[in-house]
Image (cartoon, rainbow, N blue to C red; front, top):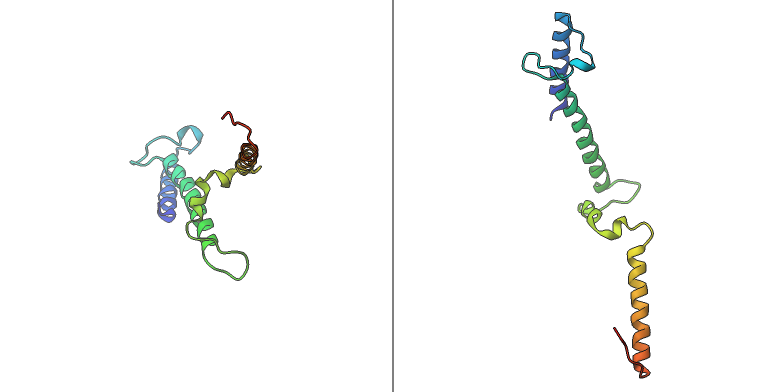
Length: 117
């Protein structure tokens, strides 16, 4: 997953395709030429881009700097909690409603009413 090696292999493969007189077009990207498939190199470059982008964003968020807030190294683990994805505070709202009804039930029980839970 070293991009310079992949680009080197892609340019060598492209040069060999063109030197033989075979134009490298969309229908020929998946052909094996000297034990190398051009499309696989492009796929690996796209994968490298995605991986290095996420690593860069992570490092940018955890290292201290003059402006902005530094996040803890484990901030990525917060993304697996439901409260992180709760845009409308539905989880907290349901807990609050349940808490209010529990208080009302306790209040009624204190006055002698029976609860049918």
